[in-house]
Image (tube, rainbow, N blue to C red; front, top):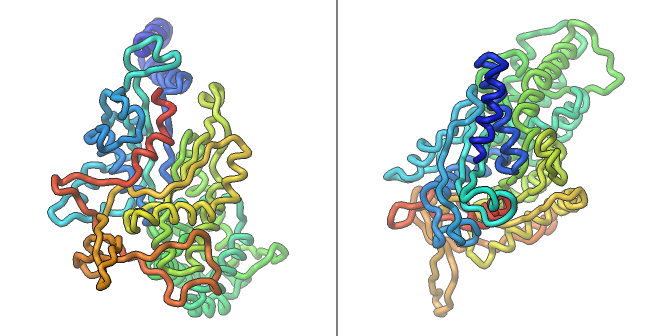
Amino acid sequence: MLDKLINTVSSSINSQLNSNSAKKLKHQAHQMLHRSLDQHITLAVTGFSRSGKTAFITALVEQLTMKASKENLPFFEVVQSERLIAAKSVPQDALALPTFPYQNAFASIKDEQPNWPESTQRINTLRLALKYQPNSGIRGQISDSSTLIIDLIDYPGEWLMDLPMLSLNFEQWSSQQLALLQQNPRAQYASELQEQLASLDLNAPVDESKLAQIALMYKMLLKRFKKDAKLTILQPGRMLIPGDLDGAPLLMFFPVNINNETAVVEGSNLAHLKKRYQAYIKEVVTPFYQNYFCRFDRQIILVDLLTALTQGSEVLAEQGRAIEQLLEHFNYGQSSFIKRLFSPKIDKLLFAANKSDHLSSEHHKDLAILLNSLVQQAQNELKFNGVEVETMAMSSICATKSVEVKDKNNVVIKCIYGKEMQSGQWMTYLPAQPPMRALSQHEWPKHGFSFPEFYPQLTPDNNLRHVRLDHVCEFLLGDKLK
């Protein structure tokens, strides 16, 4: 019935306009009608590097298109009530962007030696169509079936942390970054860079060679912060994954010690650094934000708390700060008919502590409580603005399974079993109980926390397992499938 209505409108347009204009207007009418009937969702799958965005999208596609059974997704109401007819990937509108490589990602996980998909190196997009039987509202009155369109965007998590730079000039950004470099764990790596920065004469005529040398040193430092310290606030993100900007001058900048009163001498080192920063914001960060982050309807923020806990209190605290900074750059608020058409806002937000299968099942709630404590202040503001917010622990793809062992006193201990990535060996492991709030350095356990990483683990019949992915689907999509 929807297509019939669109075709009727289109036929009248065709009689007045050339075919190209008619096709464009038909496409716009199709999108407008879908949004007005609440049949289209743009889902923001948000997360920093290594948070599991690619695995999440892969699992979501697999579970909805191939494994949507009451046994596998018991808490997804449209599946439990047997109203989901089918789901499939369909052609996307963003013709200039590559399609999310679902088949390649899935092949990595289902390989003879299962491995995690390669991290995303550029923007990808994917469109899913869920055909279902409506049971309420206007859709239930006019049709036996309806289709919900879901658009997903995948991007390098490193690029995400550039969004806070939109509200900072070069002086402010430099001040923030230099303050971070003086704190642990960055300070132990940054002494050589600090020496080079101290030796740079900002008012001297531009020395391209010197600027390139320090920019390379800063880039290598960011890579070390990511690899060794597992830090999150790493700017500019394109230094880590430059894409087609590799070697471009607008990436050759770094923080320097200046203030708003410092005079900028034309042709100086400072003038060039400032010019490059401004070009980066204008030509890279702003289009990235405007093209992909302004029209979301729903959002999931994936957070890898276990890696942060393994690294220490400073890294965990930085995760919380990074999330707070990130939330400032999305449009949140109650949705409505008019807003869906012209100014979409995110009206549901899910904070998801990923990799919950790396813990014993009785500690999943502790992981969710810890994440909730990190975002509590932001949650209050969002809820005040009418946003529905939820926090949960989940795993889009399980890497371990629960096992029980008995100690020497015959006491049953709940452990996990999986193939550990660092050693490549199968191991039974007793994970620690995570704290239920962020601990200060003084409160931090003497020997810290240790949560090993594991390869993905399939079921005996070569399928993926998940933890609460059905809860995630119900929260984010359930009300659109009534």
